[in-house]
Image (tube, rainbow, N blue to C red):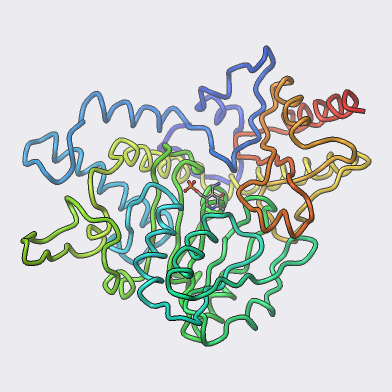
Length: 414
Ligand code: PMP
């Protein structure tokens, strides 16, 4: 892919694949079929080269140096803030806090926004389908404040019951939280509608966008939420990168969560004053090289265009779903009308881990386990599922190879 290429609605998958060095490797002597993209995506050479270039040519710390390298490193780091603001249509770059990922973003909101507002008897509302990162931080701060965490229910097919979510938006709810896209079910939640209901009641809405940003264009202003968290490593960028977008009025009112260098105005033993947001929330040395990679990842998505990404991923999801449905005894978890390319499933008579191990021997990487979503597993009454999660660089042939490997594995386990 040439970063200057004009986006179109068709994707030249073979050209795209040539940008991802890791996709060319073999696993146990078989061509790799990487279907664990919801866990972490692979990285194009443009991202790898941006990180490499940073360390070879620009490495220095941010903001603390007046020398040229320091300026270049700062420009790379602050450039990622600009790119992220553009990517999710934030009204201002100053509303983007750079973090290590969604987990840190959620914890920042939990400790700095929720905790000071919670009183005994208050509640935080989340949903049954959330990742632990969108449950546990709320539980920790709720417990400290004598508050509780409630979960909105879902249907058997893995869709949020919107009326119930709205019913649960009672006056004691001080924050509502929802995943934009479920990492287990692929379900796309109606964030815009939920945000409208929350606004009407004056309840801020936190959205976990980890699994949305790799697949669809996001416009936080159109969504109408209050907070939007994302993680870089699921969207082609290096691990240890992420962001929290929050409305200015919230950031202005939030005390710092981490203290240290870079987040202060003046430090005295009689009292310290803090920097304005977003720097107030960015104590210490960040993952500068990683953020150089974030900018390259966003450039890559922008060059491809989400129309092309979505059309290809939709075709892959339809093909994979149809092929899996042909397998007797295979149950798919998550059949929402609007889904991203994530398929969780179980095969009658076979343990998820055994199947995943046998698939690995065939070169197919899928995840088996609870996917950091214990409450969702409890809802379905299962301990684990297998999850095939696809990306725009996957192919129909890989789906067929995965299905063939699955049939072979199942036969071995009978
Ligand atoms: N939320 C969702 C929906 C996720 O899929 C993940 C990653 N599995 C996270 C949050 C946590 O992201 P990170 O570990 O990058 O902070």
